[in-house]
Length: 572
Image (cartoon, rainbow, N blue to C red):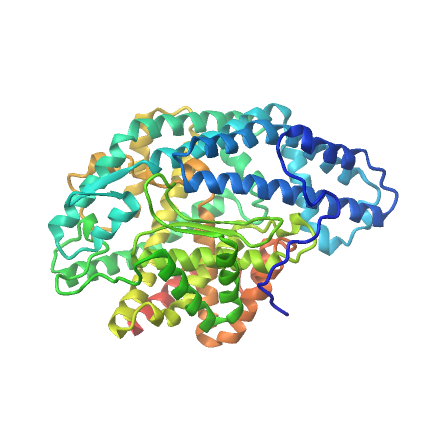
């Protein structure tokens, strides 16, 4: 397969090159054209699909830029208004047309003549969209889009003062690696206290989101929002019961390994037990890992690491740099977290993150870089809908890149001991993330199975779910009030409900690919590229098979992978 990171935006065939989305009146004629067009052959149907795909890509990219700009500067009201305008004035008018176009496609006699293998997943998703569409949900879905973004606006304003200087919470996190335990504790308490200040506001926001999401589900004929969301996310290949089994398997096979790691860390630090502000610390005579100073340095070192792995991967990030598709450093007024946002028409995505000179930022950069490479690999696919791949394979793209690149991290760490510590940090993170994934997913099942719960019941059940997955090697005494609202730090709960179990499923896939990589580097990278290049044109099990993986998250399989990770940690 020939790989090329020098993307070219395809020439528009349906819309004018100068077309801009200013208002609905500018957009509607193109929907009317598609809806009213006579289709009298398979050839005409395929042309119609390409024109519809072009319109979808232009609209998607415009919307994505509005969201990107708003998250980069949450204090700019004009950017917030531009995003809200699209969500409230454009999207609600698109949805009925999109439904009519879906029905036109499914009712066309020439649809049955389309290549069944090529179009299977695409048409399955179209049918799913028709089944879920309800006119009365249009205003609710628009309102939910706007409400979800309020989380970033609220949390983007959060800062704390340390040693007389103001820091965002992401920036303040670097003090949790400091050898001075008292300083770590002080900063930890300040950060928790800052979250607590907005606890009431975030609880009200989440309650409102739950209420409106539940109504969406009822309108669509579902018992609860969980069941609706499983259908909307296209979870054709696993069930809620599989998720429950995953939770139990993580508790049985992963938590003991996480406990072992935390006990080892406590012993290294000279403590009987860790306190939560010790989790990222090193002994007093060991300096915290300091892999970079600026966002620019982070990017350049990431490119060097990727070049050593596969030159194409590095070229993808170089293209993004040239196109201005990165915003990496943390600052006040910027939304929290990190993401890779695909840009459907031009192809090169946008990476957003909050780097604060920490080791975890390196991991985030490679994670989002993996997503970005996925976007490059699917750019040439014929239809926009072919690029809508399942999140479970999207996260394999990102999490595998974290593991593949570990041997190339010497550009960040000249000292071999530091490089070893960085690898240990990464593998510990892989293990300790699993229980948190299980907790967040299990919590969401409870939340939407019990949508009328009170704020007090929410806190009580959060703790009930959290405790069995909490490491016995960490002492949380006296922190109960903060613990009650720990879920508020997970932005997915507000912005992307139920999008979290994917990280667990995909981490298993990433570990499977890393096992391949340790045995045969070229074969593993070929499998990775081949699977990602398929986009969403295959089912999830088929995509995993293309990567040389089992689509499996049973207990025995999880145990096998945990044994592998444990053996790799012991080698370090």
